Image (cartoon, rainbow, N blue to C red; front, side, top):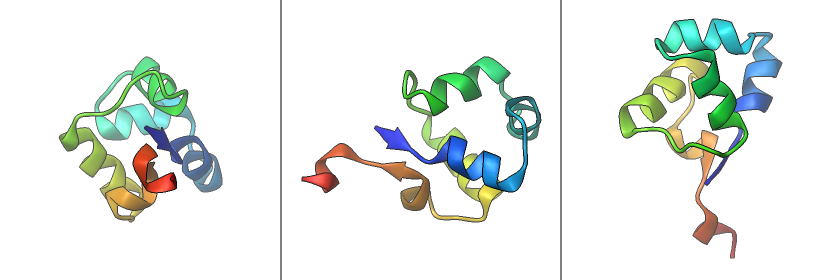
Length: 67
């Protein structure tokens, strides 16, 4: 699943470390999310959405929708 986390984080001027601290996860988790190596739990997806003030669907791009 693709996502816009890196784009949104950079637009807001937040480092991976700062985002990780706000979401109570490791910086490595943020890096893995941004690189598509890890899909978040539903709870983490909602935390990300709340942090960015967006809907989950605006952050994560489900592959089948792009066909």
